[in-house]
Image 1 (cartoon, rainbow, N blue to C red):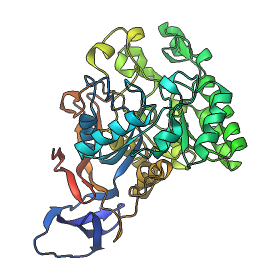
Image 2 (cartoon, one colour):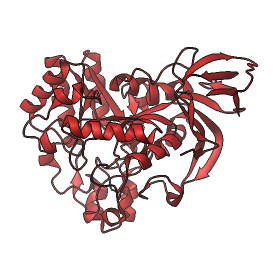
Image 3 (cartoon, rainbow, N blue to C red):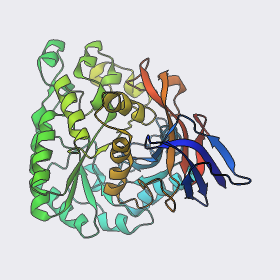
Image 4 (cartoon, rainbow, N blue to C red):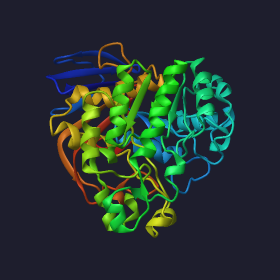
Length: 428
């Protein structure tokens, strides 16, 4: 299929035409013309590399009532993503070559984004012994990111062994940084507000202590460490210190931690319950600054769909997690682009280039230049819309942005030159 995109502003620059042919960008320039090409009018639209999510929960296998690989892939495409990393906390857990290959094949069947399985670090996410890391790395899924997300690899000796193991094939351990002995029964950020609301607090130190330990382990071993969903100002400072020492550490922040604060918990609406919890405004500002200066490498959604019965309950009984794929780019536009903290090149770097590099995805996060894979999105930066959970592609409805007006609209997404989204609608 040959597609001619007319007048797109690549990374927000001057308008140019992009010719997509045989899965690649064939040409970029002014007033291109090709007989028989499908023409897409991109006047006023910004062209960015297809986004890459390092942290997506697709729930399949095991919880298809909350999400499937297909529905999650559709939500991702609508959000401008061309690749997502599917976390391992499925049922059965993705701790063997067989399960990661199942998820990988489901992604290929859906054909909307590249679904890249994340392998569990430990068997059953139980933190007792290492999973089949080498077998998952050698499988058809070619796993390079390993995480027990939802659980911390709390045993330092086990974490060290995991880092040593994945180093052999250039893998990375993505740590859910939470010292479990400090968060027993925790419901929200620990502070004056948690005391006033009568909800058990989740202290910032529980995250920061594990990050500090793990960057020292990564430095000692000489392995790659990735920190999931960073949420505190203290964590940003530890990461900044570690990078100044040359530690091979990367980190991600979620859209909701860039926009929402602990004050949301005052409503006792469990849609705002998440792990790690929403923090203070000072933390939000520190996270934005850390993302802007590159201390935090990537935005990752931590898209966590939940069935109605798991979310619409009393706060204490509700499961933590929020939807994030379809609104991620809009949140970044509001939190960082509009205040002038990031330009479009910076957005591409934090949401496509660096995530692809961390996950070792060769075909993603590439420049929009001739010869490169045609993985890209077109965004209308002037559009604004109110989030309606009922209109989302996900099987679940637990969006923290319900009723909120957000800027930017993904008009089109292309995966290897094939449109998965056009005019803001998924094509399958």
